[in-house]
Length: 261
Image 1 (cartoon, helix red, strand yellow):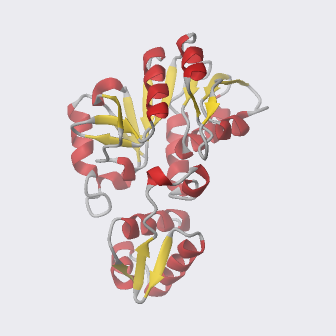
Image 2 (tube, helix red, strand yellow):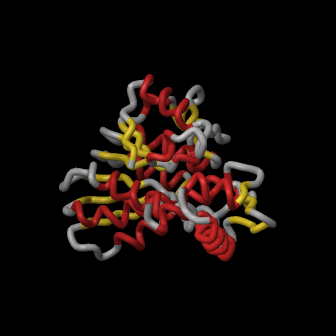
């Protein structure tokens, strides 16, 4: 396991518990307690955990309360793997709609290798990653930039999407639940995703395992509305993600292929 992946998994284990000890992390990760302490110190410097005697606790910042810049460092190595896996599914020559989010920014980074592509983006951060990349025809969907997120939403964004057709919609998501389907914390973001689903021949949803079993505020669509779901391999580990295996089973039962990266 790389250092970046180990830090990602350490953060998940801390976030998934009220308190986790250095000894528990050492046993779970298969590394020395000294290594665990160094990793926890590194996560604390980023503001992602708080060190306590003998272990660590999560900072308890909820995903829906944290802006893009706060969430961007979370599980960065995992999101980069997901980004590479999703980009590999995009055929050169395609017309792609790329959703907003910290994971889809990593998709944007890897899409340049799939050129030529026409890519319409729903986030300012993705636009920056794709601007002036050889073989990428970049379209920035109009709309209002949501404060703290840089996601493009509102009536102008919806009207623009309704006038276009895409081969593939790469959709990020706030939560996916076995009974309640795909959902988002923001009504505006949910509306844009619904428009993207309607205008695309194929939808690839992507999210790290922390989103599994989550029912956010606004429902986007039922489980079978997407064609493929890409998540990380840790989603199958009930110790890391208690709701992961159940949600993956529900997705497969709904006929949605699941790709673990």
